[in-house]
Image 1 (cartoon, rainbow, N blue to C red):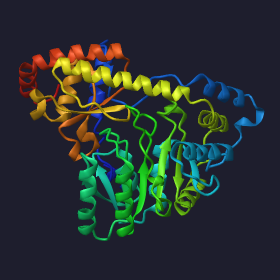
Image 2 (image 1 turned 60 degrees about the horizontal axis):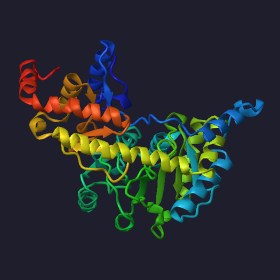
Image 3 (image 1 turned 30 degrees about the horizontal axis):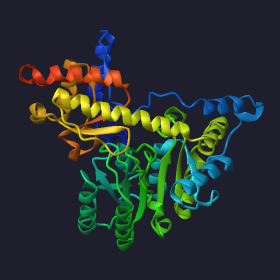
Image 4 (image 1 turned 45 degrees about the horizontal axis):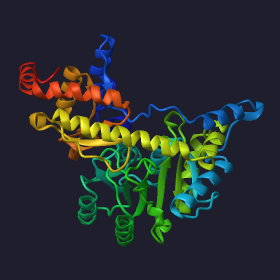
Length: 406
């Protein structure tokens, strides 16, 4: 048998695959699946953004190659957003790079910054690209438990002390995917001070900056005085404007890091389709009522999820931000673990969630629930969960007898 390619060997099996396999089989059998498993916005992109795309696409020159770091109009719009939202001034020529979504930006940052064997401090649980972007680039991940921001900060110094060579990059991600945690500016001040003390660069993922609740907008690490000396922030239009498939993100902040990213990207891509970039600039520069409306929809879903699941017997903490809830396993299924629980939940209740262990070992005991179904579907899911919890003993018994494989 031909051996696996080197970089592929470094990647773990796709943890979601088992749940996805069951989901596909049941849908093939005609079963209605209420799918909270993917963080895929289900709302339409606001009309004025789509109209700008269509208008620009009619230009005969629109199909030409674009610019790998983004057209200047989009980079200016991104800088303008940061000044309005965070009071952070950015040079659109040197401190802003438009990316093909935040995921591509993060992965190519890893390529730009990492030498083989470099140690990277990464929260756990975390969105997979945070660790595996650096693993694919030849880095070594130092996982730090991050079930709370305080736990993560406390673990960073210990991780530095026990790492050889010393870590070169510190990853932050708030509001967090998957845990939905929110942090204030004091957290970032302490994180930047730690990074300075230990000579680390800071990569901050803030893709959910506009999906927040209770009038509590999350800050940017770049608001910390001097943070631009060592930090960049990765952001995205995907959730803010329901533009996930458009693939528009940004990396902003430290000019040296942005230049390194732009150099890597210049060898890999010509940037997004120009009409997409023009429409993205229109999104950032145009009326923001649509952002408030999208946020309100997520808040309504969050409140419905928490209330209806509580009535069903599953206590889920209300997330302060993001489009996810981070839910501890119900008591009756706690011993099953997040993978088996997720498989049983879709098989027996027709409800799909993401197992917490897919986001790292410290995600065990939790599942991630995406707020990507409407409120009526959420209530329907809660009714299914009520029956699922009431029959836990029988369901677990059958799973045990079948070798824990639905």
